Length: 397
Ligand code: NAD
Ligand code: MG
Image (tube, rainbow, N blue to C red; front, side):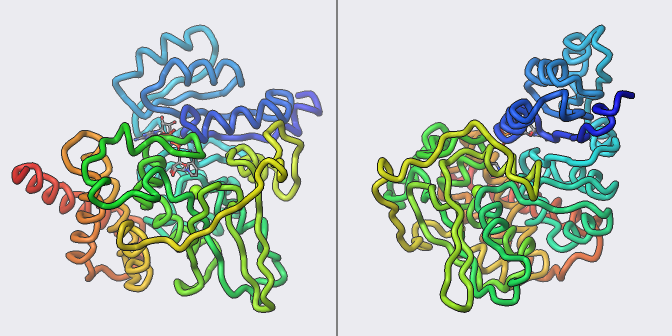
């Protein structure tokens, strides 16, 4: 092997065909592509043509689609390339377990938990875009990364901002962390207006271009709810130290307040590639071709208190944090189930929070999980209960 090859950083991209995944490959291309990185595995689900294209462009050793029915399509698209092909859950786990130095966790939803854990357990640095890992498994996930010996580097823009504004030797002096929220497309809407919206309307985000789940989550503010819980586990702060402030321009990505009254913020244009690049080369800051902030054009930054009446997701996150135990996992599972039902037109926009709340209230007896098996069992049970409520609502409609 040539010396330059030996130094190439080995990377795995879980969820390479999504919004974060494609941005990750763009950053990798900007930072030298195949000359600088050895892409070990790329994974996707439905978008097999893009997955095959990515595997060819970056010379991946393996490409996996989570969708078993697409195996033949992927195999055909990669015939003669030497790229190993797989499909389904086991193949996804196999791809995640292949040795690499760094793994981007960009599969959407709880489906990302098991493969990300597999990458963590073998010691890869984990660039964490997927919030559900921490919301569902919490400290067990943090412990798994630590036990594997890799680093946990946040990619979510708010958590990347906090990670950047946290002074390592001054952790004891942190008073609060302030998560900014764009407020989404319904920031100024009444609940009556929100009640009738479709997924096509709810997914149109004013500032960020993102996948469907996170876009709808921005509209309902469930995305921020997940981020509050994510922050607790990443930064080891008490629930009362986590604040949310609505900031419609999405320029201040989040802030850390210290006990001397100082607030450190990280700013940038709304482009996930900055946070991805930082997670890829941490603690270096690579040169990236992203838009620069023009303060003269920007002129103003607005902030307003969030409204928990119109956006109950924030109140539910607070409840989950206060109750502890498995409440965050329950909230996430119920909300994810309700999100799919909303996208399928089975329930209304506001029902998502109602369902999450009802399932959380019903499942308060589950103490902190001691094993991943317990996590998966509670997740399954919360989904079952959410589905039952969805079916009732459908019958009533
Ligand atoms: P996306 O929907 O654009 O992409 C999701 C990826 O996961 C795709 O590659 C898809 O093929 C794959 N996938 C979907 N279902 C799967 C399954 N069942 N099994 C295996 N793979 C599956 O999503 P995204 O917006 O890129 O978000 C990815 C994650 O990053 C989410 O957890 C999201 O909350 C988080 N995140 C996204 C953004 C953003 O700007 N898009 C910002 C912060 C955090
Ligand atoms: Mg975010």
